[in-house]
Length: 495
Image 1 (spheres, rainbow, N blue to C red):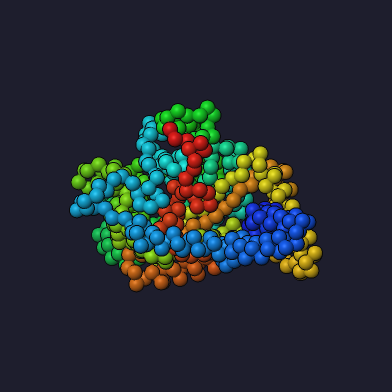
Image 2 (tube, rainbow, N blue to C red):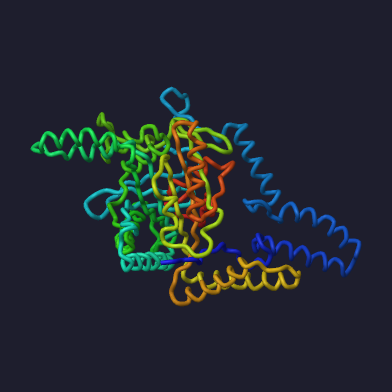
C-alpha cells in the first residue's frame, strides 16, 4: 500500500515559512502606518523607519530552525546562562553533600511514578507529569511486521491503525500517543542464554558440542528490540473530573483494554502493561548504557541482592555535555528532531531503515497528537484557505509558484475531503537519540542515524543547544516541546 499525503501545517499564512501570527503582526503594522499617514506623512515615515528593522529582527524567520533573529538571540543567551551558572548539570551520589532527591534531571524532573492495580489481579505503572498534569500509561507490544505478511493482512492492519488514530480524535482525554522503538546490539548475550538454556539433557553429546561451539560465534548478530505504545491522558478532560490520583488511575485502567484491542487489530500484539520495576530498569539502562545487560536481565522488582528498587534508582549519578552532546554516567547521547516527513509517494515500510537494529543503540519516538473531532474540520479549512492565499499572493507579486506548492494545496483539499468522510486528523513528529559508551564511536553512530534517515526519506535536524531536553523528550513520557513544558494551574489537573 502506498501513501503520500503527509504535509507541514501552515495555517492561514500567505507567505512561505511565516506563521499566521507573524503574518498578522506584519499586516497590523502596515495598517497602523497607513492610518498614521492619513494625518501626518512625517509621523508615518518615522513609524516606518522604526517598524521595518524591528519587524525584520522580531518577525522574519530564517534558517532550518525557522526562528527569528530575536528568538535565536534569546536561545543562545539562555544556553550561555545555563552553562555559566552550572544549572544544566546534575550530580548525585553517596558522597554528595546535597540530598539526591527522587527526581530525574532536567525537564524530566516533573515525572512521578504511580503504581496501581491493572484491574486483572496485577500491578502496572503510570507516570504523572506534575508540570502538565498528564498521566502516561505504557503498553509493551510486539508488532507482527509486514515483511512476511499477506497483502490482505497488511491492508487490514493499516486500515485498523488509521481507524484507531481517527478514534483518538473523539476522546478528548487522550492528549497524544507516542510509539517508542528501542534497538540495541546485545553482543549475543540474549541468544546464548535463550539457546543454551534450552538444550535437552538427553540430547546427543555431539549436538551439545556443536551448539556450544556455534552459539558464541553467532552471538554478535543478535539485537535487543523493544517496542512500546505510550498513551498520554489528560485527567482535566475526564468526565466527571477526578478528585485524586486513585480516581485518575481508575479512569486510565478503564480505557486501556479498548486501546489494547485496537492495537491488536492493527497488527501489534500487546505483551503487557509496563510495571514500575520495568520502567525503572529501562530508564536506568537509558541513562547508563554500560549496565544495560545487567539491569534488563529480568523484570523482578528486586535487584540481585534482594533490595527493593526505588524511583531514585532510575536516574543517573551525573549529567553534563555541551551544545552537541549530552553525557550521563557511561552514556554519550546525540538527539535529532524531525524537520520534514517523507515527500511524494512512499510505502508502509518507509521507516524500516530507521527502525531496524544496527551497530549502535538507537531510540525512536514517534508522537501523534490528534485534533479533536470537533476542531479537525476548522483546522483543515484554514489550511485550504492558506493555500489559496499563498497562490493569490504569488500571482500578485509575479512570483512563479513551485510544483511543491501546488501539490501541497492539492493535499490540503484531499485531506479535507477525507476528514468529511470520517478520517482522523492529527500531527506527527519524531525524536531520535543514539547512544554510545565510547566517545570515539560517537561520530560513527551519528553518521549511521543520518544515513538511515536519508534511506527513510525524512530530514532530521540535530538538536543543537537542547541535547539534554531532547534526550528526555525521546524517552516518550509525555514531555512535548511542541506544547508548553508546563501548564497554568487553571489548565492542568493537580490532584
